[in-house]
Length: 67
Image 1 (cartoon, rainbow, N blue to C red):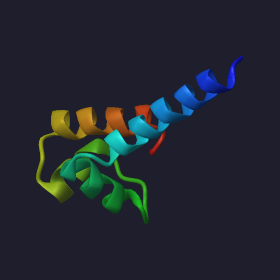
Image 2: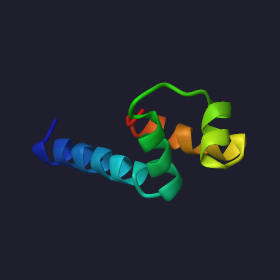
Image 3: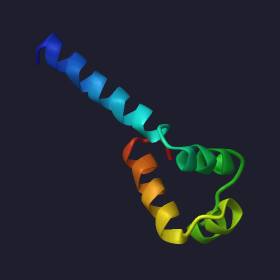
Image 4: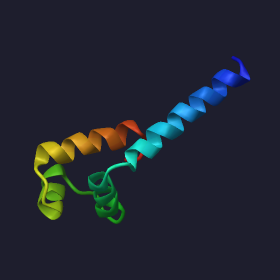
């Protein structure tokens, strides 16, 4: 595997992580989860967003390896 390919993979992973932080809702979710585990329903009630929105944002955070 070439050095260039390794660097490209690191760049792509970094971009995915930054994407995870690129939405205010995701930042609020991360903040809510920093001290305790919460279910989607609990996050929805706490943050004032619908369960589908919370689920969608959690999927992005999970894909980025943040949660």
